[in-house]
Length: 309
Image (cartoon, rainbow, N blue to C red; front, top):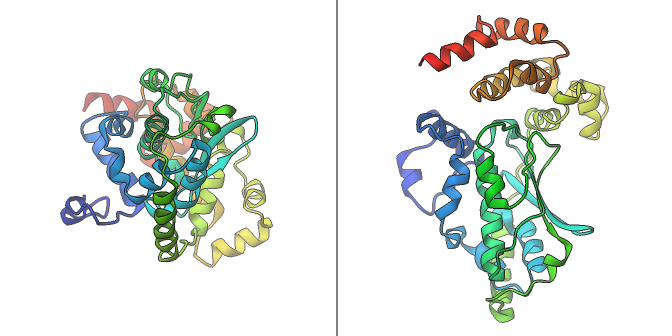
């Protein structure tokens, strides 16, 4: 817990708020210790939906699923300030996750937890076995994905450009079994009060760069110009803002590649060549050289050492 910046009292106090970054670190440490590659997904299986508090009851008392998900977008920060939901209508009904002030590339378990929770909530509120037509995650996963496919009822896409859960367009019109317009009106007032009490956290420039860089690396576009464009600023402005915090783009990219490499190597089903590609290296030899510089050993040696432990 100390490594994650948490205390025993925080864990035991059901009213305590846990920093999203600390939660991600804690879940990663627990998953490694158990070990459980699908810790977040497994935790969501028996989690009492009512533990989500005000957010859950606002959704449950809404009239339709589309209305409930629109309110999930507005009030999701009440329960998790680091992950935002965006509800999109059109050819389908989708919810997309975005990370604010939290490095997305370090997370797997929290986003898989919330995605399973989202589907469970939709099924419970509608009294149906509603399944998504599309589920995608930004992080890679080659092994153990069959359990996710079986639960969601579709082939889950990994190493995608976005974290997304989508339902058929008609799902938005599904009536909710516990719809209560009078209760909903009261709960929305509480929701607005809760939002007013929480200032929107500013996204540190380093985290913004990391979150913009992550989906660009596998496409060989992990360059300062591309990241600056994704953030809506010039490359010069990006460099100036980083320098103000004693940071450089190359330094951030180097550290991020190292963190991701160490994470990917834990999954024996991901080949060294694929890891090199996911990190934006054109040649395996370039990745091997960089990894030796970071750790003093080759990726193959690191993986062999992990197996022997």
